[in-house]
Length: 187
Image (cartoon, rainbow, N blue to C red; front, side, top):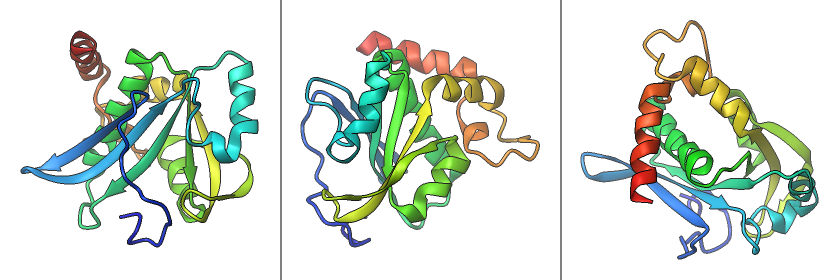
């Protein structure tokens, strides 16, 4: 998907203990992937371009993580599949790694989507991302905000009451606790 869109780089998924890649499938076919990068001594990928902003969060005691390499098959138009993938990613970040703040680098044409659908906020100015040879904004959302939206809207997609975000398509808080419990058991 990244090469098809004209982004530079290898776009391979490296074996890294600080990253987990999740895949969504439909009838055995992978329809989407996304990677969660957990902060470590090596930092996160977004540090290459935005270390000044991310460093401010670390200085305040935040445990940061990042979302990278989101790719969904173009024929898939399922908010539920996308929301489920994001929700499991947030569960990993929050429950298994105690992350407090989530970052994502996005192309300008995708910025509004993440802001409207997941509540991300723009931090700083547009910069050039050499990993993909394209412009990028740094977006941020606190895990507290994500958790609040899940408590308020998770599992309500059948009656979202005009809500336009992805949060109604997330699992219910009860389902989230069950998923988190199972993930914690397997490590």
